[in-house]
Image 1 (cartoon, helix red, strand yellow):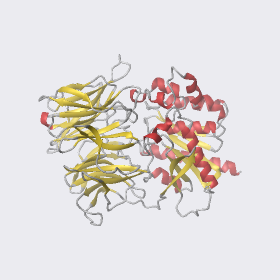
Image 2 (cartoon, helix red, strand yellow):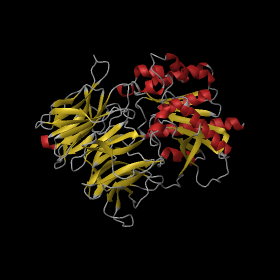
Image 3 (tube, one colour):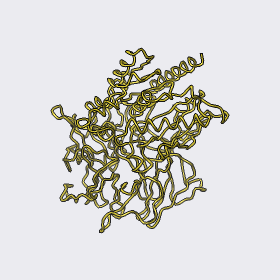
Image 4 (cartoon, rainbow, N blue to C red):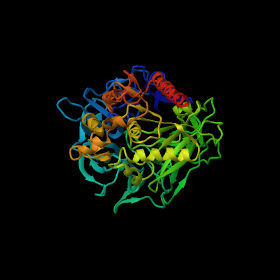
Length: 593
C-alpha cells in the first residue's frame, strides 16, 4: 500500500496493489495529507485490516476497512488538532501519533506525543512539554517506546534528543530516560530491531550513520560505514523511513552519497552495497517484510517507480527487482545530469548540469541557475519534467547544492549558519563563472530562479551580483525580519540560525533583506506566488514587487488564488513554465537587438 499523488485532481490517493495494479481505496472527497508543522508526513499506517489516515480537509484521522467496501469512518473529533507520524500499537488497539493543537488564545500550537484508541477515538497524551516531537517507535514486545524531541531554537537537522520510555500494560509511560548524550547532534529515525535492540541515525561523527544501543551505550554498527554516505536526510516531513530489517540480523539501509542513493546491507559484521537490476538515482520510503523490501525509486531518465526487491536474489536475476508501478521512459530524449563542482574558498560546491541533448559540447548556451528550497535541503539528479522543459528549448540548467545543503555531511550542512544570503550567493556565482570560463554558458544569457528559500537566494544574488540578466522568484523571501514575525511554529526560530537573533542583531536582518537592497537590482524579475501560502506569505512577494516597480524596473507578477506553498495544480505549473520561458526569451531578444 501507499499514497500516490493524482496530478489531474491534486489529490493524494491511498492505493493498494491488487493483481499488479494500484487500486484507489478512498472516495474522491478524501485526500491523504497531514499539516503538522505545515509540511506533514506520516499521514497513514496499517493497523491490522484497517488503513488509518489523515484527511487533508479536516486533519482528522479516518479508518478504512480493507475487507469491506464501506466508506471511511471518522475516528478523531478534535477540530483544532492535527495528526501525523501515525504508528500502530496493535497490542493495545491504538495508534501512536504526533499531535499539534491550534488554539486562538495560544501564541503557538502545542505539540504532543499521543495515543489514540481505535474504538473510541479518545486521544491520550503520552509525552508533552517539549516544543516538538517526531518518530514514535514501538519495540516488538510493546514494552518500550522511543521517539525524538527538540526545543526552540533548534531544528531537527541541528540538535534533537533521543528518548526511550518503559510502557505499562495500558500503554502509559512508567519511566522515561534521555538516551542521547549532551553532544549537539541531530538524532533521527529511532527503530527497534526484530530482537528489540534500539537503533537510531545520528550525525555526531559528521555523517548521518546508524548506531545501536548496548549496555555500554550507543555504538556504531560493526564494520566500516560507507564513506561520505548519509542514511537519512533533513526531516522537513515526518515519517521518513530509510532503514529496516529483512531478517533479525540483517539490516537494509538507503545511503546517499554525492547526490545519489544506493541500497546497503549490514549483515551484523560489515556493510556491503546491494546491486539492483535497475539504476535509480534516489531511493526513499523503505519498507521491509521478510526477504522482500519495497521503496520509491527515482531515476535520471524515467518516471518514478515503486520497486519490490527480493533481497535473496542477485541483480542478474530478472525476479530480483520488480517494478510494481511507474518507471515509464518519456517519449522525448532526456537530458541527463552531469555531476560537477565549483570551488569557493577551498570548498567544493556540487551541482548537476543538464545540457540540451544533441547540442555540441563547445557551444555556449543560455543558462538558468536553479536554487533549491529549504535552504537546509538538497537537490538530486532525478528526472524533473521542469528541467527537461528548459533543455528541450535550448537552455542549460545548473541545479546547485550550495553550502548548507544536506547529503554532504554535517560540516557542509552547518556552513550556512549565520551566512544565509552570503555563502549561497557566493556558491551560485562560482558555478556561473566556472561555466562561462569553460565556454559552456553564454555570459549574455544567464538567469537565476528559485522557490521559497531558493527565491531568497535568487533575490539576494540579483541584489549583489552583475552576472545575471534576469531572475524568477517563486514564493521567495524578500524580508526575513518580517517573515520571522509571521511564519509558523516549526520555522519560527530557523532564521535565528540562518541569519541572527532578530532582537540581538536587527541590523543584520536589514543588511540581508533583498527588500532593503531593491535599488541594486538592475535586471527584470518575474514573480510567482500562491495566495494561500502560510510559510512565505504573499506580502513577501508584494512588498518586493512594489519596491522594484517604484524604481521603474520591469517586473512581471503571477498570483494563484488557490495555491499555497508550492504549486500543486498541473495547469498552474504549466503557466509558471510558459510565463518564465516567455520572460527570458524577451530578455534574450532584447539583448540581441
